[in-house]
Length: 354
Image (cartoon, rainbow, N blue to C red; front, side):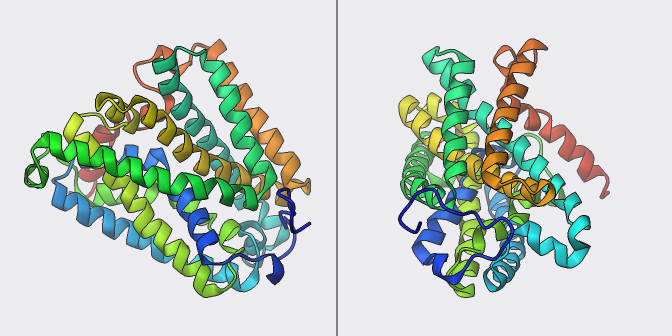
């Protein structure tokens, strides 16, 4: 079994020590999880509403809080070898654990759908390929790696993490040069400001649900030190990097969406490649985690539930098309619409602190 790609997911038991993973495998797995285009989109929104220095402070503080929270969860996961959903039984009992498992699973299924649209819509705009063919192809590939398990997620992340980091750095460098250099970046002042409290809520809230599922992956750490260090690096530095890429691109081009930023820069095919890997590494992790959660509730295997969840998302997209909610017909894709009125909501939120 150890040599196979398809492996046990340990839905109902602790991960045995012989199946744990070392630093580099855990590093790419956790960083791949946090490298997500929605974080760049949130970063772009904050970048357009804060001065760059205030943006940096906000993102570092917000992701530090996320790092502390997820690091504590990683410690518990590595010590026990248990998933998020098995750990909740200690607090809520077996029956009581069904509610948090269900809530967390539904959020991850939802983000899987959002991520799938974030990939399919820009690619469709550039290539002209039928949107639903792209949804099907992307959904099948992402579902496949989630089905195969953590080993497949790790193998994909070994490719995706350096590729995303390099392409994001290239895009950000172009953006800074287009602005006239770092001095112009730090001189940027937003037309409409966002309060620090509201900005922190966006930064932390953008990944708090995924962060809560840290034990689903950190339980594979060979030691508590490995699990905690890789998790903190992923959420504090990895997620901060995604926010930074999004903010720099947004300040330079006026677009909060990384695909539009890179298209504007002429990086069309690199953008499709980076966007695909970026979303794939998070979407398969989200689907994997949702399968574990629903497995706790239904007692069906995680692999069966991953297939069901992937099919549910695709069918929902088809229903959206029937009811004319197809994002290709709108000005922005479905992920953008989550942030479309972000500044207005943030101003309202900020007003509550006055």
